[in-house]
Amino acid sequence: MADFYDLQQDLFDHHRAGRYAEGLAVAERMQADFPDRSGITWYYVACLESRCGRPEAALATIRSALDGGQLWRLRTLEDHDFDSIRERPDFQELKDQAERRLRELRVEPRVRVTAPDGVRLPPLLLCLHGASAGLEQFAPYLEPAAAAGWLAVAAESSQPAGPDTRHWDDPERAFSDLGGFLNQVRAAGHGFDPGRVALAGFSQGGLLAVDAALGRRPFPVQAVVGVCPSFPRPARLIELIQREKLPRLRGAFLVGEDDRPYRAGAEQVYEALVQAGHEVALPLLPGVRHEVPADFAERLPKLLTRLFD
Image (cartoon, rainbow, N blue to C red; front, side, top):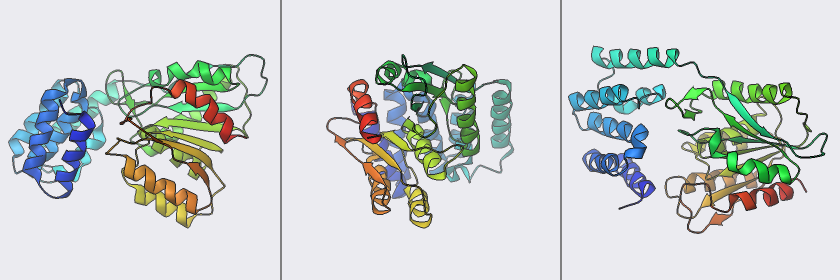
């Protein structure tokens, strides 16, 4: 069986080239071969059905995703691929139903904290999961970071990607959550050194980490660790890096050598940061695709130590 991310890259290539029928065939294969990825494959199929002039099929796919509990990320319905059906009343009704269900699901941001022993004001590591994940994604790495002297926090967004998973699609809400995470940490009685704060994020969480660090929102960040970070629109960040006089940032992007969909964007943002004088490394990890590397628990404490030398 082909790898999910290889097929995803093939789909993206077809879409960019306007080969919508070929892209739809790939999307349908992904939907059949990877039922555990149904939360995103329905979207690929519906987009390409719409692009192929099959409005009834696209609406049926959206309806099936809504009924099956897979449609939570409302931003997906704003995609230009749906312009051909956007004004239809049945499309608007599906969107309204999704919005009502989302309002009924009350989700609060939350954290899990592991504190180091005997350190009064430790540095803070705040870990941000990828899309369609939760704080459990970084839970295995809290103990190794705490053992190295860090106040280690795994955070979970308030934006549902499903009943038990989250995303960071709305930037303003994501920044609000970031401030709330620190409030929760302090309310639990944990102090930390505000001059030594690092954000670590996987995929979309890596994008949020870089955005927050560059914008100093909602608090100053001194270092960033992007784990296979996803920069779907690198030009926006590159323009910000080139235009603004930003405080020097330290960081590392751990990028899978075989991470076809996202490697190029990470390399572009890395180059812009280096050219602007930031201290950023980009180790390419052999054999790693779009995933947290198997040795991350061992790698993370060493990386944090280097970033704050």
